[in-house]
Length: 408
Image 1 (tube, rainbow, N blue to C red):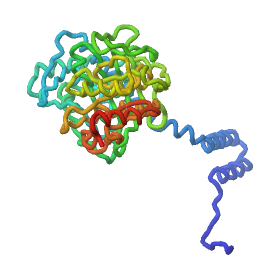
Image 2: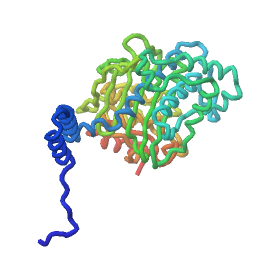
Image 3: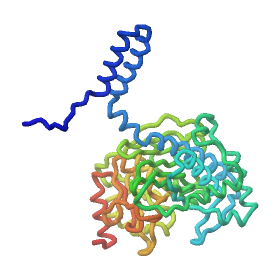
Image 4: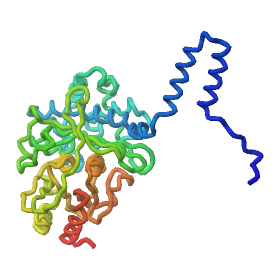
């Protein structure tokens, strides 16, 4: 084959650098040690395995997400023990506490310090606080006095917020419309606010979407047992506590598995890999559902459980703590059945949990078997309901759900 006259062979950069070093060393012996050190560094850089680069993908985002959730959880725990939680109501009559506002401010502050160009979809806005100075000041006092007790970890998050006015502006930076283009963080500062108010389970949730796909997720559950092997009990959704042995931080990165670790007040604790437990006998399965009947059709859930042969009583608990619980094998199935044809789930209520369950070996779909679509805005407008289960049995669960609900 004739040689392309325009083709000019190129020597690898490392080879050219090595030849240059040999020539210089021959004429200037005094610089030989320094040149040898440079050559060694270049060789190590050229032989870095691609695996290292792959496993470090989203490592910074993961660390910041975990620390941001951990710091926000410190604030929510302080409010959890207060008799008065400063509750106000949104337009849909759902409650918001001073913990919601404070946690959101701290998380957005950390994200904007590290990723200033990323958009943020968050649940709360500061309009109510601008019109209510006493409530604003109460929240500011919480935010001002909350920090990680590890100086380096707190430094990674950018430290504290300047003043109360800056806090309000930061809260309002969670107003992105979302969508399927670019990097968007979703925040639920206190998922399961009613559970939080009644002394049950709640979660601080954060996820990173890239072009509509969840890439990083972190969920802080101050009232869940640290022990991954602790089974779910029927009363776990009520009379909860964050005493010793409680508080767990779940997290995941796409393609890298899911982990849990104790929820601390400073640097991150050592993480442990988690996975959904194999489900070989459906009669031994446990399934989770929401405490609030308005969030999931509980009578239909009971019919589904009966048809599947599940004999255990359902475990009712608030928040994405349900996702974390089944991801580590404490439970098996999570059902959130639609109660209205018009209701649209919010993306911040599911993004982190969806990824953590999938990375733990589970499958998450809506009642039609479609993956949850986080790229259409602030809601899951194209989905209805949620079914999360181990991959091996998900199709079986889905089939029964569709039979009971009459989905074709």
